[in-house]
Amino acid sequence: MAKTGEKLIAGGKRLDGRAFGEMRPIKMRVYAVEKADGSAQVSFGDTEAIVSVYGPRKLYPRFLQESERGILRYRYVMAPFSCTDRISPGSSRRGTEISKVSRLAFEPATFLDDFPTTVVDVFTEILQADGSTRVTGINAASMALAMAGVPMRDLVAACSVGKIDGHLVVDVNGVEDNNSEADVVVAMMPTKGRVTLLQMDGILTKDELFKLLDMAKENCMRIYDLQKATIKESFKQQPDVAAVAEAAEEEAREAASEG
Amino acid sequence: MMRRPMMRGGFRGRGGMPGRDRFDRGPRQDYDERPEPQPSDAGENAEFHEHADRNIVIPGEYVDDKKGRKLGNDVYEEGEKVFAKVLGIPIVNENEIKIIPMSGVYIPNISDNVIGVITEVGISGWTVDINSPYIAFLPVADGVDEFVDTNRTDISRFFDVGDALFCKISKVTKNKTTRVSMRAMGARKLLGGSLMKVKPVKIPRIIGKGGSMINMIKDKTGCVIYVGKNGVIWMRGENTAKAIEAILTIERESHTTGLTDKIAKMLGGLPAVTATEPASDAKTDDAETEKTDEIAGMPKPGWEPENFGR
Image 1 (cartoon, rainbow over the protein chains, first blue to last red):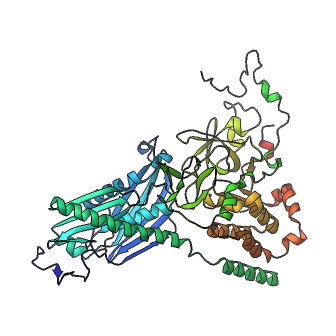
Image 2: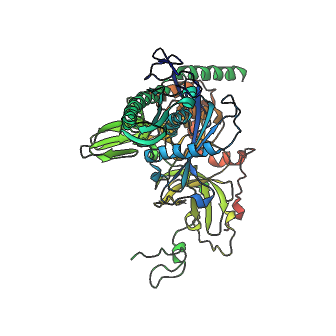
């Protein structure tokens, strides 16, 4: 039962018609920010995150540099228009915390020792918020880091799970998140089976937690497959070379006739 | 015990004369008279790019079992298994397992030929931007062939801020403190012309196997082109626009096959500049193009022969 008294589960289905183990429709793309070294955009239903990665690059001020390793800077912000209440732009208490935990989710997965004294900047902007914003951000950031060529042990896939109205569900949306009995955020390196971020809010029994972790792992694998497919697909969708050559030839012919 | 390296122009060994070595070297050569570098870095990588079966791996993806082979770039091992560190094309042969990355910044490697731009003139050398997270230092001793008394000389007479250099990485420490040197085959100051930047990982493809691709672009466009491994390309000539277009196409399509033919076709329809004026002329005619090639908007050459301290 929700805090407002509304039911979150009706007829064995969730309010948006999903089954308990069903995720929202996922959309992913890379090259979302052409200017960046690596970028990606991911949406889980109405939650949408866009991430750009810059670096490894020089780190200033110098006192922040570490001579033996590079550092990762992760910035999570929500756009002012991302949800019904206006979010004041810039960093907030909540944003600072999420930035930190997201950074910690990536630190075990990156080989920053290869780039002493540098920084890798990850900028995550939540364009639309409907629950599970941090996991959407992490999924996008993971792809953006890969696209930027930052050496990684594995991609990081993240997923939220929770308990609503006594049922264990995956991919918690905004309404469910606000009214859940518990919600758990899991980020992991899927092929290694190692968890890099685990956060829990609410009350769960030990059994429920382990069950939720299993569900999260299973869904992280699905997300990982999508990430992998999206990245690989992006190298097939390149402009047609023949068309480019033809255009160039035509141009040259025109130039010749003018000359 | 490590010996401290001697300063140039100091005593060389016991009983030597101060500054003796500088007399032994014969007359110095002007940078622009030096021979053009051969695209020696062309690399095995170019070959791999062409023969790779477009099988792209993502970070963390299993590549192969190690089986006692050497691990090359951008892979790591866990137990017997080898995984990719970066997004790229895996190269697996009987000696080595490695990845040709699809993206990433330039990390200096010893003996790479790079194009750098002077950002600062110091007391005993220059700071050089080599299009990398790490800046390089060019000591006077490695930058100029003659003896220079840094107490009395303003070294900006040799290279000034904004000058572009074709130079070689001579030293990289563990923390990636980098030194470059002009004491290398083909090292020279690049006068006039224009600089462009591409992704450093695409450079092997732009050079092509044994320099095939870049030589073709040079021949077809009649441009003088220098390619730095750090992703900076300098070019000068009449058809630079076409050369730039060709290079950008290679950068964009680098993972596809049959690129050399495509670029040949693309450049094939050029107006007949190369026909009336053979490519070999354009290359040897450095001195002539030098005079005419003061291109507006470029960093000032800042180099006048009469100031060269002779």
